[in-house]
Image (cartoon, rainbow, N blue to C red; front, side, top):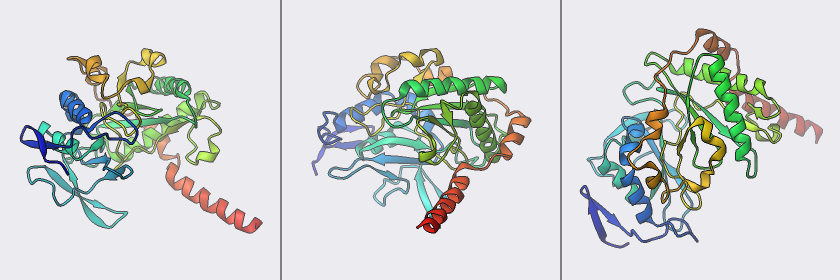
Length: 319
């Protein structure tokens, strides 16, 4: 371990010239400089939300960190959340300021995944999210087509959203919600909107949760609800070159190459703008009939679990 090479906002920064990814030329300094440069854009999406990060330690593969390590400074704000899956309290960070963001950057935290709800209102998500996941291979054009379907499905129900690259090969559509919206209502509406988009062009889009059932179509993922997290706008991703999850105007999606939006290129594109804040519509109330429809649609993960068990039984019987 090297000693402190630089101090910013009271945070000692170390090993800044080490590469983040094996065989790549992006360094820890690039990550720190990027997050510092975009802090006024990324922090509003992280503040007051339990945060998970993806870290890249030297000689190890990337891993998602939810629980704060014991050596976390006391000045990092945190909140305890009960994790039903592991039956324990998880101490999540609340990344509200530059100092905390720089500390995470020095920990080689590359990706930032906040919850859809704030710590004060965990049962009231601020946004509904549809995650568009391409089939295998380079298929961003297909994802753009599926995004157009989602946009039409939203418009048909009187809603509007903003879109950003995932930082990988997909897109995220965010719909801001009025404060009274419950997690159950948002989850139901998300399922209904995904099915609406699928119906518009079932040859292009699918809501099939089981990968082998997608048949080369774009997966319209409606499972980003309740306690789910979504990578924040402006967050880097653990990919070659460190691409960034970046806001895009709906009409500009055809012209975007996600891999070109990186920690090195994005600060110049932003200058003094915040396109994510500018693109976001005002909070909206979900139509009651949309929520009611969504309540009749099975939860994808649960349905896939039961279907997986059924197929396993059928295979055992065939054998």
